[in-house]
Length: 400
Image (cartoon, rainbow, N blue to C red; front, side, top):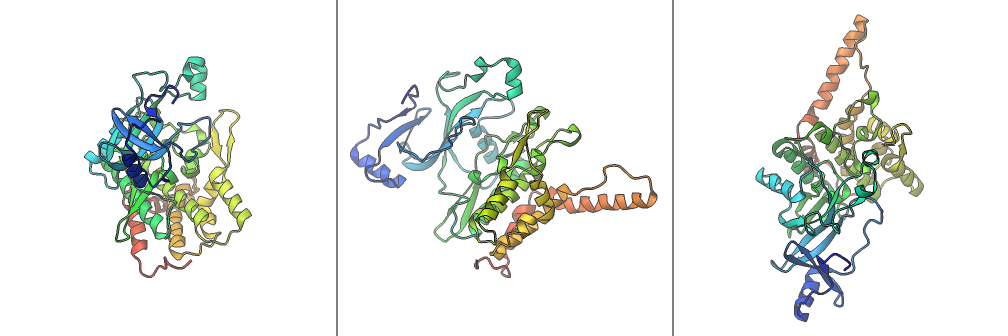
């Protein structure tokens, strides 16, 4: 198809094998197939796929349910344009590090690699050739390389649930993977979002969650300050402080607790979108827009920032208490997460006052804030919190 000889409509397979593959991929009996390559390994996918992002910018990431001809297994095949940077390793190398450090809830890599020859103009972006070096830096133009990775297949995204406990279990497992990856493997994910947490259900109904898409993760053991200052993540779920205009022009470094906050925003978003609550359609649309979508461009720097609603809701809990979620489990989890994380945005005097009485109050406030934030230093805080609530027989997870 076009100049991409790593994808072809000719499968060269007998009819019986095609029928078997259609059954495995759960396709219609007359569905047309295509063959796609990762290095020399062959995979079969449906020729017609659901539409992905239509945005003219971004990395054009697509995920396919594919059939591996070598292993006769169904796999998750990700086709993307990875960022070529000294601070970012190809995703399969990150997975190797995670598995070497025994990080749980991580998918198995089947195979991976760049598409095309080295510096193949058909599979590497050529944008910089048409833009001056000054504007390249101003516009943050990146070099991108066409890349594919095949992973162990997991059927459900975190928003594809039938029981409200399922996404909480998946998020718990993803949070456990995230914490161990950051503290043991020294890999910080930096993109906690609805598309990056998946789960499967075994024959006994047990849920197993997985944290995927590590291609924007940061190797904390050798990350430069410049790499740590890069803004990454999905806008809707990124920590509020990373999207605000920096105060006093202080550098904003994405840290592990920012990702923990992202787990909260994701849980809040899922609850608003997919569980019963008191907001009507227009109220819900406004709440989603204000807290997850709104932005403005700073005229001086050209940088995009979020409005103040996200910070205000983090402090007040309005987006947790206001909707009056019907499910007790969801309401309890959200309130507990918000109460702890709200201390990140507590307003305190930044300079020690001169008055002795005020000084004493200032020091007491600072110590109280440290104590309130201390649990977040433990990477087990969120998965343990969710486990406790899921196992609590006094919490009603059934009634809507």
